[in-house]
Structure formats: C-alpha cells, structure tokens
Length: 159
Image (cartoon, rainbow, N blue to C red; front, side, top):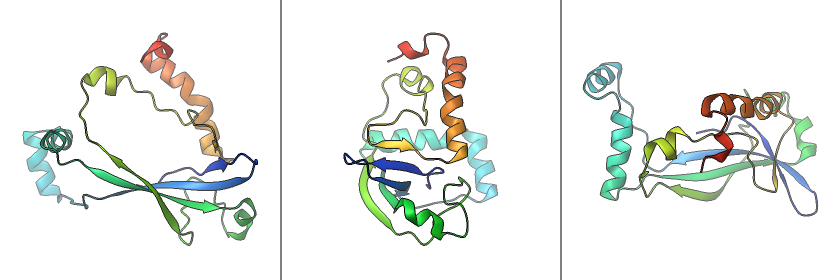
C-alpha cells in the first residue's frame, strides 16, 4: 500500500530528505468479484481476519516488503504539483527496498493488543519527522484528542 504522507528523514548532521513509505505484498493480490464477496461474507463476515489468523497458525506467515521514495528538499520545486500534498503520488521517483515485515505471531489478547492500539502520526522515532504536508500537520495535532476520547482518560497508561 502507498503511504499517504511524506515525512522527513533527518540525519545526525541535520540533513533533510523527504520520503514516502510503501508496503508491497509478497502474497500476491487476489480479488473477489461482487458475487463472491456476497457469498463469502454471508457465511463469515470476518473471513479476511480468519484467513490471516489461520495462515499464521499454519506457519504460512504473510510478508510485505517496505520501500521508500526519497527526495532532496531542492527537488520539491521541480514538480508541477505540490509533492507534499497527501493526494499526490511521486510516479517518477524510484523506490528503494529497505526492509520487510513478517506477521509470524497472532495476538494473545485481542482486546489489549488490537482494540486498544492507538496509532498516531506524531509517534515517530528519532530521525523521522512530520513534513510540511498540511493534512499530516492536522493529523499530528488532532490524533491525541481523538485517541483520548476513544481510549478514555487512562489511555496513556495502556501497555
């Protein structure tokens, strides 16, 4: 899947590069036609979750490769659109593979490990910063409030 936002990678020298992250499935893409969807979902509405859990139980671990696209700050002006606009892709910027994610374990406690997860675009490791993307800036600002509402006053105490 394509990452919506561009982020900034900042090295120890303070040099900035803009990046977009992309996950590419190694399972292949298998779609259902509308009739198949209706048939499958009428029997098991959670069929995709059940398929994932079953594959992991069998040792058929799903994998995704992680790619990045990198731009120098001076390259931003070379586009005929705003490359930091979340609705835009960077079609002519090459991708570089930097890692792989393997789902090799199902959760032990679905409520604690899934329902209470609170993703936030402001939770970043050192060296990765939000870009000037206006939508990302709004999400960085608003997610703390929405997570507090969803998880409750003790949200920061969750494991």
